[in-house]
Image: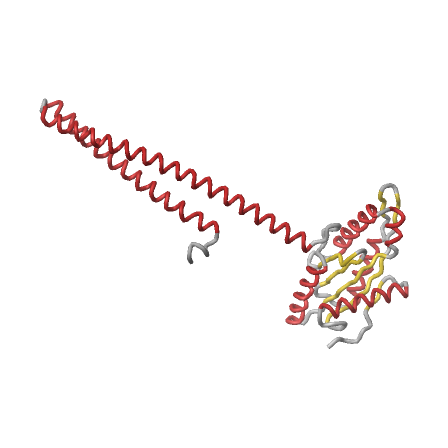
Length: 278
């Protein structure tokens, strides 16, 4: 892998490694010079005790030369350590900026796939999950259920109490939907006052209807907002895989049709009566 194709963190580590290697080399030189100086000084001390002046003069000159080298090496070590400190600081700065950039990217991706008002997955994310669930259901011969949930007369709430109250109703609806289903199921806000639920491994029609009735009861619990007592009702259309559709668009369309049938009949919920889609 060339330097240009390495991840940013690797490109930072490479020069840092070179600086560290040079620092070690300088330290080795200082240590060796110190050892040499120690040897010379020991020899100098021995000759001082014996009174051998010619040897003392030579040893002193050699000691001075070594001392100079030690000083030079020590200065070089200071410069290398300064470079190392700068390299470390640059690396830390780069890693911090990378961390912030990655966090911003994750936040941007999350925001693009989740509804601002409720925090629920958007239709795009729901469709992606539904396609994945259909693939798994096909492989394992599972049944799935898609529930299309529409709040009845939500426009009246907006017109009477204002959009801020309407947004609170939507957020409360989202929380109630999530509390009424399993953690493995997916709740999404389709648009406006419309929500979707993907039920995995739906056992049979009765079990799906039981979930729909549980949702309706949960949504119909009185809701007090800013002193106003609101009663939210909903209609639910139910489509089953593979009976009512074998693709994400087909299932959504079938659930939508069933929801409108429930509204017309004022039956609160309806199972799709469409023939199987091939």
